[in-house]
Length: 446
Image (cartoon, rainbow, N blue to C red; front, side, top):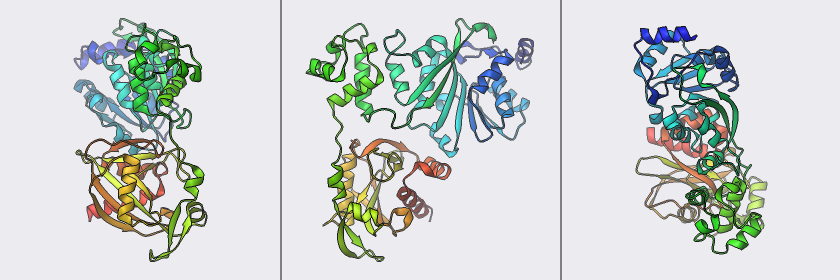
């Protein structure tokens, strides 16, 4: 819309722009087209737009052939959008984006986000929508210029801080351009900027403990002017040895360390432990027949290499909210690395029965011991990797302590989200888990 049209429309629908809602309406049509072009939208995309206002970007996204979900907090603007765009590919959701259930977007294969974020809650909104794992593959965001520079900052700059590293840990942030205040009505007090965010590849950075890493970063940036050795001494007793090994100045301050150096510091404190590959390959498994009767024992490499029938257990752990814990398999796994899997899973080893293996795997992978309910048995098939699987269920007591040599990361997910995620993106999951989850859901509904 042109500036005159915006003024007329706002008067007609009796909307006085509210500063706290970020209601500054874009009236530069060429700029609007350029912004939407940065999202590289195709008809295969599901576009989520936060704060669509009068629909300047909504209209252009629909013209690209995408399905669009417009999240608008202001009821009057939401009603206007529904009347203006009577379109089968548009859904207008009248709600606060802070209350939106982001994981439900896993039900779509390709999700992109457009947003003109209110300045006063831009960091909270962004952190909500980039929380790992995120269903979104690309973000194009209009932000206050200062905030955009913080998200995209490089080390040794004044904008570089804990928020920078928190966002950049799983994402790459590209500062596209400054947007002058003059292209908005009403004009904001400061300029804006457009950033594009894309997920990092899982193997782009060294393995690390996210929780420990962010703890160190928060501590390091708690007093920016102080040297890190003063702030982190309780965590790193031999500071000089650590800095020598990691290759940075012992007198460095927090903003001088790159993300990779921060990860190196976390790994220096708590080195990653990996299983001996040769020992794993030599681990003996019971080889069974089609009736799950033990025939003999063979090592892992022979069992997997020859697709022999063998035994495994899968465990689903639920919290009080009845969400299920999914683990992302370690990057070092010989099968299905970095795919999502049951809460805990593993092979039945020599001298074990299924129940004993389930208890052991739960303790080894998640550091917990809880009563387990034996649910159902799944027959060996190519989908299970020729494993006979007993599936168990348990209720979480205490806190999960994931074994980082076995698990890359983990997250609690609502069962309805798992249903939609597995249906839309089955390639994200280990095949054995898909068999277990489908069997579990059939049992629940039966």
